[in-house]
Amino acid sequence: MKKKEVSKEQKKEKAKGRLMDFFTGTPTYNDDKDYADYAYFSAPLNMFFLACVVLHCVYMGVFAYLQIPLMMMLDAVCVVLYAAFVIILGRVKGSWIFCTLGSALEIYLHQICTVRFFGLAPGFHYLLIPLVFISVFIKKKGKFYTFLRRALIALAILTFMYLAVFFSDYSPQYRLPYWLNTVLVIVNITISFLVTAAFISRLVSSLDSKRSELDTSVNEKVNEIEKMQNQIIISFANIIEARDGSTGKHVKRTSEYVEALVKELKRNGDYADILDEDYMHDTMMSAPLHDIGKITIPDAILTKAGRLTQSEFATIKKHTINGKELIEESMSDIENDNFLKIAKSVALYHHECWDGSGYPYGIAGDEIPLCARIMTIADYFDALVAKRSYKAALPTSVVFDNIKEQRGKKFDPVVVDAFLRIRDQIDEIARANAD
Image 1 (cartoon, rainbow, N blue to C red):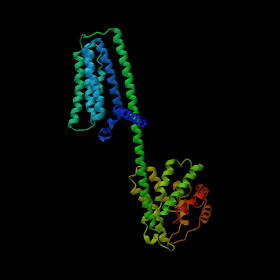
Image 2: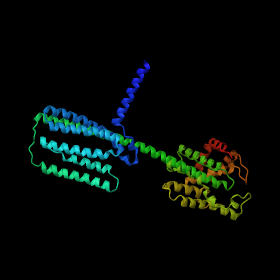
Image 3: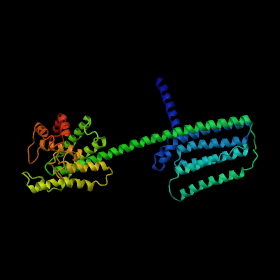
Image 4: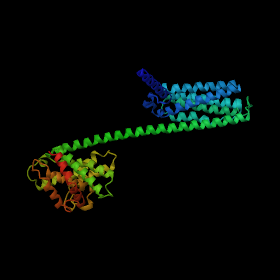
C-alpha cells in the first residue's frame, strides 16, 4: 500500500516537473547555434506571455460585466494569441517569427480598439516593440530575411500613419465612469510595471546564467589548449635534449626546480616588484625551452665525449642566440607577448653569470633578466647531478656546496639563498625523476 502511495507522489512530482518545464523551461532546440541568441529570451518570454494570458482573462471578465462584447471578444483573441505563444515558444523551431508577428497583431488590435471605443491615448511607443524584435533576432542574410525585415518595418510605419490620421478626430463609442476608468488605468499600469519588472529580472538572470556557462566553457577550453601547448613544448624539448645524451627527465627536473624556486622567491617576498603571477607562470612555461637552440648544433660537437676545442665550445655557445631566434621565428603568432619575451630571455641568457663571466654577451647582475638567473641555477644543478655519456653524476651534497661557493659569482645571491632554503625539496625532485 505504501509503495502505491509513494508511486502516486512520484507521479505527481514528475507531472508537476513536466508542467513547470513546459511553462518556464528553455526549449531544447534553442541549443542549436542558429537560435542561440533567442535561447536567452525563451524562459522570460514564456513567463511574460503567461502573465498576459491572466491579465486579458481579467479584462474579459471586466468587459463582460460592463456588457461591451467587442472588447470582450478582443481580449478573448488576445488570450488565444498569448496561449498560442506559450505553446509555439516551447515546441516550434524558429518560434520568434510567429511570436513577433502575433505580438504585433495583438498590439495593433489593442491600440485601435482602445482608441476607437474609449478615446484613450493610442500609445504609439508600443509600435517600437516589433522593431526591437527585428533588431535582436533577424540577423541572417538573404532575400527572404531582407524582405521580412522590410515588411515588418513597413507594417509598423503604415500602422503608425493609420492611427495618427484615422483617429485624429473621433468620438468614443463607450464612455466609462470616471472612477472605473481611473481604476482600470491604475491596475493596468501597476500590473504592466510588475510584469515588465519580472520579465527584465528573469531576462537578466537568464543572461547571467548563460554568460556564466560561457565563461566556464571558455576557461575549460583555454585550460585544455594550454595543456596541449605545454605538452607540445615539453615533447619538443625532450627530442632536442635527447640529441646530447640526455633523457626527457632533464626537462622535467629543471622545470620542477624552476617551479619550486620561483614559488620560494615569491613566498619570501624576493623580487616582489617582478614576480607577479603572470611572470611566475611564464617563467615556468619557458623552462623546457631553455636549450631549444641545441637543435642547431652538430651532433659531432653536441655528443662529443672528450674535451671540446676552443672552436667547438664557441659553436656550443651559439645555442643561446640560436634558441632565442628560433623562439622568435617559430612562435611569432603567439599573442602572449610577455611569454615570448620571457621565453627568449631564458633561452638567450641562461648561461650568463652574475659576475659577468658568462656568455653570450657577458652581462652581469640585474642586467640579466630574473627568469634567466633562475633558469641558470636550475640548469647548472641538474647538469652536475645527472649522469651523461661524457661524465659521471655528482652527489647532490657536493653540488649544493658548489652552488653556495658560487654565490655572488656565477649566481644571483638572492636566488642562491632561496635555492638552498628548499634544498630538501630539490633533493626530492632529483630522486623522484632520476634517470
